[in-house]
Image 1 (spheres, rainbow, N blue to C red):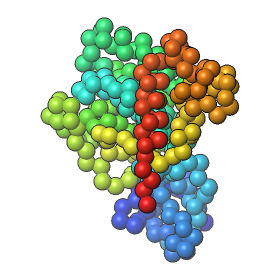
Image 2: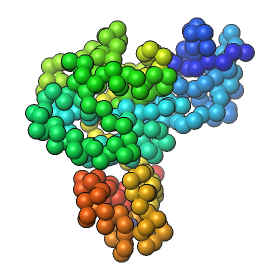
Image 3: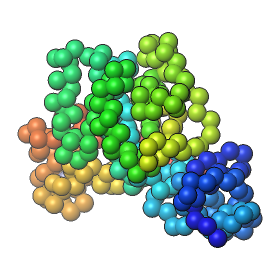
Image 4: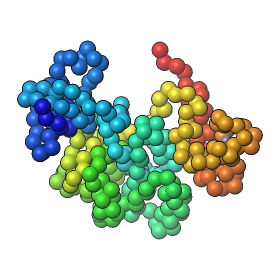
Length: 288
Ligand code: ZN
């Protein structure tokens, strides 16, 4: 048996690449169906001439997109068209943290901002750099692309972002051979279109990337409301200073997080979005 990685799934057929870079199309053995295992893109597998025999333990397991063993998620936010949104960024960060994946923040279309606008936004985004790496790019002029590429090396990265945030342009700047279709007209209007239909990993240099459809709105999965606070590394750092052990940082007395927000050491937008997310999750109706 050989070891390999699933890099594509189309119509029940898996493309597996072995350590030498040979590709082979395989079906999983029927046994998986009874064991409730379904191999997915990103999985490391053992396979023979005919089929995938074994799925090796996963490091993590994303549902949407259905990819396993993701090293990092590249969160693409545009500076303008559509306007930058802390709400979307914070929500995305929480969801990625929930999936146990490392987030990287990319701000695209920085050329559309005036110097003043950009420096104002940068001074706020600076807040995140104690937790995550933040990249500033202008795909058109290849500004910031090389630095981002260095961080993709040897990793499996999922690219995700708001519709129209310039994800395809960014991928094309990273590798012009990808030649992805960018709908420049709809991008100009701030409304991108997307054509991704199946799950596939694309090789760039010595790393793998997965493109995902853009989103216009994100939703929190059903979760216990006390879980949300644990998805904020900046809050958990302070939580031991809160009076209560399981402080939700909302209305509790002597809350170190709320105090930091009031004193301005926690970014205003970030805390206020947290309160909104908290409410949203609390109001979720269970789906049966
Ligand atoms: Zn607290």
